[in-house]
Length: 255
Image 1 (cartoon, rainbow, N blue to C red):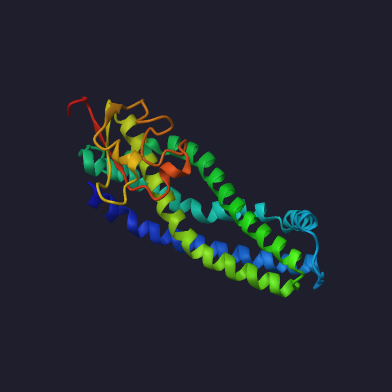
Image 2: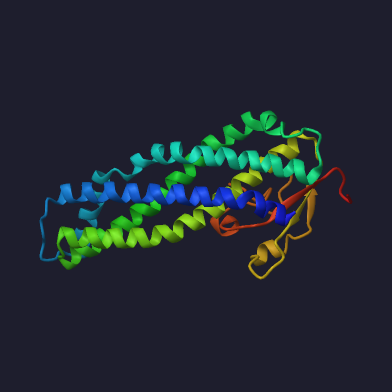
């Protein structure tokens, strides 16, 4: 089952990673252009930390980083939808249903309703991290009295380096979480009554998920608060980031 998940998910993870990294680089380009225009090549000899933070907050507002939400959503939506399709396909392959690849059409409305909220929320979180990095670099630059170009160069290096790691983390997490949601809706629509948690059973599995391995609950119950399936969007980041666990659905508790 885990090998099947890897085979289906890996190509989509690579596409998602490449797309989001490209989006990060386009966003960085726009941030630097706007930052330089705002600063107009001025240089201070250094200001207090309090004043630097206030000035950085003013600059962040003018950078309008949040405007990138729609751009990210449009670019990533096809991959999120494909992940939902793969989740449905994974369910069909594991459970041998007779829907012959047609199940996603049945669950599509419910899946897209979930994705509309989930996708927007995730992109806002992604952009918030970018804003925090940008604010930190600008604040430090203002405190130390460095030039606009120096701040821009530091910003470019920090965001570029961080984005490479970020793109991998986000891709692995988002594709897994979305596949698992498609998988879960498929099971509910197909009338399954129970579900069993299956971890990757290796050293990378977090202790909280090792404890869930093999646990069976009713299909409408949580394995633990906020975690109805691996990658549940209600759960905190510590429970879902880079998770590789899967679910086996059953008609009876002892299946």
